[in-house]
Amino acid sequence: PSTVGCVDDPSTLGRWDARFLWHPWSASVPAEPRLMLVAGDGCDVVDVGGRRFLDARGGLFNATVGYGRSEVVKAIREQTAALMTYGLGAASTPPVVRLAAQLAELFGRPLTRTLFVNSGSEATEAAVKIARWYHALRGEPSRQVILSLADGYHGTTASAVAMTRLEATRSGVAPLPEGFVTVPTPRCVDCGRGSLHGDCVVPGPQTVEETIVRLGPGAVAAFMVEPVLGVGGIVPLPAGYLMAVRRICDEHGVLLIVDEVLTGFGRTGAWFAHQAAGVLPDLVTTAKGLAAGYVPLAAVTARQGVFDVFAADPVVGGLRHGHTTSGHAVAAAAALAVLQVIADNDLVAHAAEVGATLLGRLRADLGRVPGVREVRGHGLLIGVQLDSVVRAAAVTAACQRAGVLVRQQKEVVAVAPPLIVTSAQAARIADTLTQATTDTAETMS
Ligand code: PMP
Image (cartoon, rainbow, N blue to C red):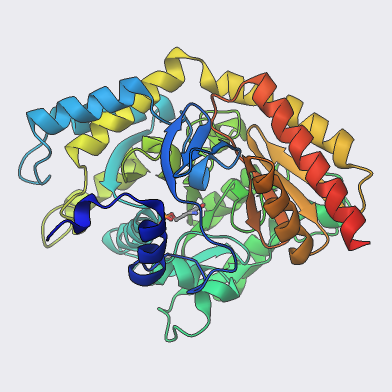
């Protein structure tokens, strides 16, 4: 390495970005030059030219405590200096132990056992294997099928891709692993009532039961589901849906895995969305808000009874799964600091309150704008459903020009600012999005 590692002039960085970097989930040659971000504080990020943006998408929905949070930076610095990490299994480190105990407290009994991994996708892979092992160790090795929602999203690793019907992730990578079956997604936008009711026209929890019965007794290992579909378009499950599938899973000996990668740690205005729904999962996966973007970290937290079964494993008498950096000490220290910031500043209640106001404003302001089909969400996870992908792309670009970053997901514009967003910043997000949607409606009509 010569001086390459020190180059900081914007035009060279731009050229090298185009030449050397392989961006995930992105066109090889993007239509617009990408932002080059160099700094962040609070809810703002700053580009290489010094322009400030209000980050109304919280990075990739993960920047829950915002940027440059001194408590988190300090925790990372101190743990890195003390001991960056040591591979778990043979030894433990204090931050990982503390974080596991902290999660047990937040989840509440019997969700007491946490396995740490590095990404949401890895959490999905681990949960799938744990579910199948659980049944095998209990003498039901035929329970292998993992059910999930057709429009769900659980990551980009092999099992996660096999688990849903999203064409963008599936096409061209066959053969995918076997043992995954999807059920139709309940989308209340097709009805408008927002909860289960007698004459539902959207496919409800009964489709889960019908599928379990169709596949036969002893075939299904688990049902995995997001409380609010994220990549699928910010689609909250109808009220009562999770509760109903919990009952169905219990009746048929099927584990319930709730994917809280996106919804966990306050994003929906509750510590966890399954708690707000009054449902106890067997396994919960978390990632994004756990370390709030400061470092990669994800987790699978299991019901104690699931963990207990693994003592009977014939090979190691426990879990045969993990990564070199599972339970990285620096990541755990960062997560502990993040959770402390959330608790000390009451950010969960704050997210519920500011989110409700923002949702109300967007509903009122966007309700009459042509091209807007629905505004929905929980807490600070809001989706504006438009009538086309082109319109959503135009609105997203217009917001960025006005200094507010939102996230386009097909025909949906997603809004998910850091949980520290102030009322004034939330008002600016609403104003900008309304203006962008109105302007786009005029140019597109
Ligand atoms: N589950 C959900 C609900 C997600 O939103 C995501 C990421 N968008 C994942 C899993 C996968 O996480 P990762 O990108 O960290 O692999």
